[in-house]
Image (tube, rainbow, N blue to C red; front, side, top):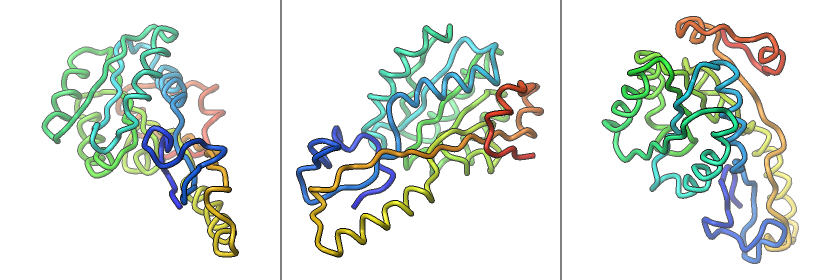
Length: 214
């Protein structure tokens, strides 16, 4: 049973979502079209952006290339230049964010993966220091000082996973249980961080927010 896995097909966990075809099933947390949603929200709170980077660590985010392709496809609709920010060590994090902050038009999307999770305090601090509007995939980044986040509600996935575990323990085969997609998402904005960056959060965006952190 897996939870919080992005693109389980390309990662080789299952043959298809409807028919896993192996002794495993679970819940897919991230879909490629989230790239466009993250970009839309980032432009909504910082409309002046013309350069936006998608940051991820390839070894811990093997699904990153799929998100990058989706991001590059969506970018022209928002009049931004897409930048693939592939990182392998903490020093590269600072280099990328400092370049984005060298002008007043750089923004950042941080793709959820184990590496960016471990280094989230560094990423959040650098984004604040270099005044780079940044969107994250999970609420705990925003709670720690990040500007904005949009992503699946982890507790909901684990609650739904418990029902699958119960069915498996009662004799159902994992291969016969379709992989479930995330159905609940949450949007959070840190108003203190927005103010520090000189950003006014528009009323139409605030109306969509599930949690405002002040």
